[in-house]
Length: 222
Image (cartoon, rainbow, N blue to C red; front, side, top):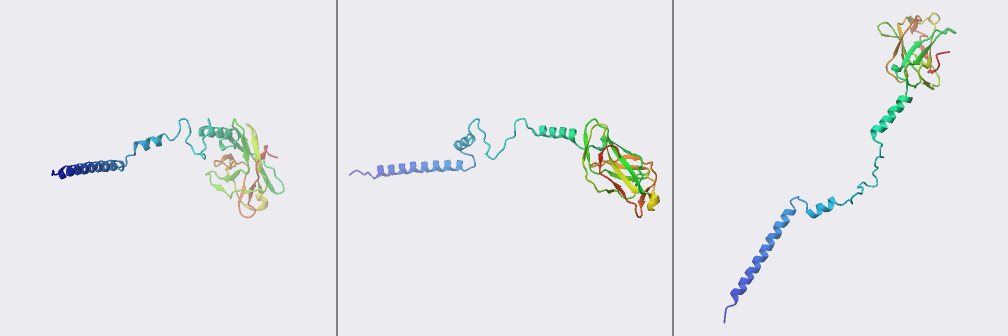
């Protein structure tokens, strides 16, 4: 009888070799995919997820209006401020009118005049301080007299005034000094205007030494 075991063994060995080769190939392919390199098919699908010509913004996003760049908005606000904003120190001239005595009081109109080429506004109380020749303040800041401030619109050349009042030193007996100037600061400004003071002594200490200032109103005084 012929021995058929050898062909059977060869066939079995060949089948085993083919199976082993397929297993090694499969293992090598799995290692390349897990190295962090994206699969080409998935990468292509991600980049083409948005249809051509269609926005990818979510419903909650708000796109800026065409032509409404931030610089345009800022420019409009700046132009509005120039046209209707408050008067700045550099746009005003200060002066002190003649004394208006009455009932033991000395009253002076402090006048602010618009010297610029634009219309601007003033609102509220001006700051005021008496100073000596060296610029040192004499006495405390004036008190604000009760009142209802209003916005005063000043076209070029127009004026607003506030009343500066104090008790006559000869009557009140307050300690006095003779200022060299009155510093007037427009509302909401930091830089004062310097006005030469020629009206003599003012109260700077002691009883009845308070000075008061009223809110600005249109005109140059009573």
